[in-house]
Image 1 (spheres, one colour):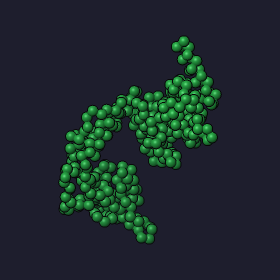
Image 2 (tube, one colour):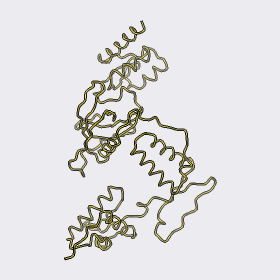
Image 3 (cartoon, helix red, strand yellow):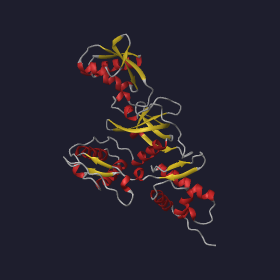
Image 4 (cartoon, rainbow, N blue to C red):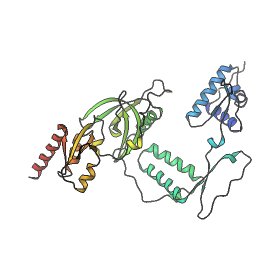
Length: 360
């Protein structure tokens, strides 16, 4: 009896992709068996071959390769599978010369004539180079590696390095998180798996364990934050990564998401530039602030709050850090004053007394 050598997964994938890309029309599973030696090897049952193919197909799709399943007219089993060249290969890249237009690409014998041509203006190319430079400057090794990889691939066809705009730098993170922490949290965000970690709460100086549903990472005011919510809660809170340790992704049912993102949640909107008192993991307090003197700075700050019906001099603010909010109001030298709740008003009055005593 002849032993069957197990084919490496990467070889199966290459053979499968080659078979799909070589055809313009959908290919049946029986045809794929003939093209992929690992499927035809040995005395495997049809069920074993099918399971192996389905795993390969699902894993390739997870990597972004759009293998299509073409349904049969009678809605039974799949009639075939297809991978279009225009969906798999990158478009041809070109830089538009000033005053000239790109001539249509002629068909070639290898079947790539279906690929589009992506033409960049000089200003667009400079914007790409600048974006890559900023990603490198953020200080995250993993993100810098991805940026370098993208630049190398684009530079094969485009003069990307020549388009870089020097002189612009992004402020470095004050405390750079561990690259492994980035990778762990990024994996949890990508697969929508719950994340457990220990967190140091600055306000109470307490360290405790948190289990959250991670929704995304963002960089703000020289700090990295994780936007997440507790299971069963609706409020999305922000966790500073420099205070996160021992992060672990839920290992149960790795192929199944643990949660769905809240309806209407938008990370860029959530991560817009915020004041220090808006950030934190504590429960939000609704503070009402009165405009005592309409100076320019005070009016602009007052508009950050929500209007109070019936009194245009009052605004409501959602506050997570009362101490930071009171210090922010104090900077307006009495032009803005909290009127409720008592927790915020007392904190503000205490800061006023301490300031007067200091300068007496």
